[in-house]
Amino acid sequence: MTVSLLPTRLNDIVASATTVIGGDAIHECENNQSTPAELDDIMILGDSDKLIQIALNFLSHAVKYGEGAAIEIYFSKTGNNEITIVVEDFGSGIDNSLHDEIFQAYTRLANVEQRLTQGTGLGLCLVAELTKLQHGRTWLESKLGFGSRFYAAFPTLK
Image (cartoon, rainbow, N blue to C red):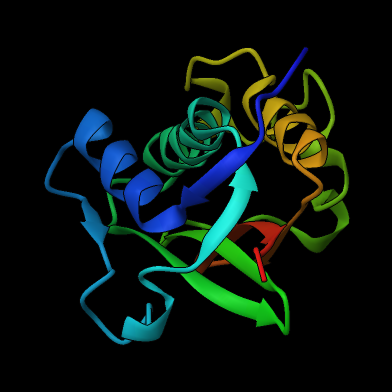
């Protein structure tokens, strides 16, 4: 898989992804406290199509497994030269023992609710691979009963 790395604003990526997914549950948080105004124009070297795919896969996962609760997408600064796309859901959460496994191909969570949800188990694996191709990293934070936050962090342009 090839990527075309060009200067890209994550603000534009978040706006595009929320437009594609739509729905009342997704809240683009660029105007609330989750995304400080000074981050609006930060640029990364990225492939805009692949970045949109990352955001869409995170959002799709949150819609499927968020149990109908609100979903937020925003970006935040996670280091001196790093900015992160964050998708947060308020569903049932993911056990800590599965955090590394969930980004591997064909991983599906085993509880009954999630077996009824259609999917291939490739979405988050694709996110991890697309993020790596753009010199980024992925991870998640989750608390059972309270939901999950998925992260894809990228180096900023100086």
